[in-house]
Structure formats: C-alpha cells, structure tokens
Length: 300
Ligand code: NAD
Image (cartoon, rainbow, N blue to C red):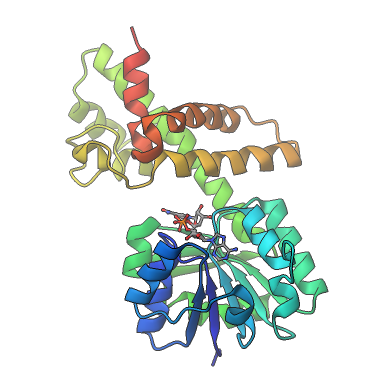
C-alpha cells in the first residue's frame, strides 16, 4: 500500500484528480499557492498544508499537476528556499502529471534520482471532464518497478494507464499524439471549408470520409462542423472541450521536441504557428476545432 500522497497544484485538473483519490480512501494532503484553489480543494474534502514543505514532509508520493515544466523544476529545486527534493524523505516517489517538455521531464528525473528519490512522468489526456469522472488516460515514463508502484494510484484517477518506456517517455508519447491531433484537426477543417466552396454538404463529406481513408478522431469524434457528430463542440458554439490555448501549448512542446531532436518536420511547426495565432485571440478559450472559423473567415 502507498502511504500519504502530497498533491501539489489543485487547479482545473488537479482539484478533481485529488478529490478522486480522497473518494477512494487515500490519504492526501494538498498544497496550492492560490487561495481560490485552496478553497475549492477544501470544499472537496482535501486536507491542505500551509507550505509545500509541510505537504511533502511525511509523504511517500509527491504528485505535481502544475502549469509548466518551469513550475515543476522550480518546485523540485526550490526558488529562494529549500526545494521539494530536499525536504522530502529519502526514496520518495516524485510523480509529475503536468504536461511539460520531454527534456524538462528527463531533467526532473535526473535531479530527483540524484537527490535519492524515484521519478515518474505521467501526463494525461481526457481534460477536466476525464479528471472529474476518473477516466483519464495516463502516459507513463518510468522504471518498471516505479510503474508498478504508481499504477494502482493512477487507476483511481484514470481508466487507461500506459507504460511508454523510461523517464520522459510519457511526455514523448503525449507530445507525439497531440501533434497528430493538431495537424489532423487543421486538415479536417480545411477539407470541410473546401467542401463548402465546392458545394458539398457537411453530411456528404462526413459520410464519405468517416468511412474512408480520411477517417480520424478530429473528424469522427470532435467534428469541427455542427451536425454530423451531435456531441462535438461545434454543436455548442465551440465551447471546450479542448481549449485552443492548451492545443497551442502542446504544439509548442512538440515544436521544442522537433527542434531538439532535429526532425525534418514541416506540418508540426506549421500547426504550432496556426494554433498560436488562434490562441492569441478568442480561440484561447474556445475549442481547438473552432480553427475552422478562422479558415472560413480568411477564405475569399
Ligand atoms: P491550472 O492552471 O488550472 O492549475 C495549475 C495549478 O497549479 C494552479 O492552481 C496553480 O496555483 C498551481 N501551482 C502553481 N505553482 C505551484 C506550486 N509551486 N506548488 C503548488 N501548486 C502550484 O492548470 P490545469 O488546467 O489544471 O493543468 C495542469 C496541467 O495539466 C498543465 O500542465 C496542463 O497542460 C495539463 N493538462 C491540462 C488539461 C486541461 O484540460 N486543463 C488536459 C490535459 C493536460
């Protein structure tokens, strides 16, 4: 059995994830510097610590769900004070579920192991809805024995737990998947706008492509036009779903990974630019499939 879990970062995702651990009877202590997050967590019945050091002192697992890799590395190392790696008990398992750069995840693992701890990267997909329902997918980068330790914990918050390889492999899997998603949503949206110009109904294009070689998640689940898939965000004026700002963030991580590995990619960087522009405006808070509106508006 795992002992106390220190849960740092109780925002949109972390709050409901921690609540599911509590519901399953796990000992959890939370920390978040933002008062609104503290209040929401307390309402979920999550005991809160006043400082990160207090949260981590007795924990056997330190779970982080933070905005970016800089937040994670700063918290591990400490900024103007002792970091989590210093205050934690020896051989604590550091489990980071934030979405961060692959290189940052590997760095986090190196410094955690150097400090005498264990390290796992386990970013998620499934969004706030999946976090609340406990149906997230976890993509895990870890040594096998550490994977065995975290799997029962992750199963309380998710329904698919995939061991992708060693340190950093979870982030690698996430960044590759989301690059496919970003590129394919743009392709599907361009095809629908082209179909409109050619006098094709949305339903006709959908009926053909969804059963042919154009088939993909962006078309058949998150269809960017209203009608063919009644549950897709297009049917509710592009309320997310998966917000443009998050897609832009994930594509920047993809871009960083493409650059640091030297892959001769063209579509990934282009998708990153397109979603940066989308997220600079109203798209930030709209579903990423709303990119079709930009394409349509720019078309003469
Ligand atoms: P969020 O901004 O709502 O929550 C992050 C929380 O971390 C905030 O409450 C913030 O106060 C807190 N925080 C910052 N520094 C901290 C520190 N040092 N110690 C403790 N808490 C600290 O973000 P979110 O939407 O919950 O996303 C969290 C992560 O999950 C991100 O990396 C994001 O990319 C990823 N993610 C989000 C979604 C989504 O749909 N929101 C989906 C998949 C993955």
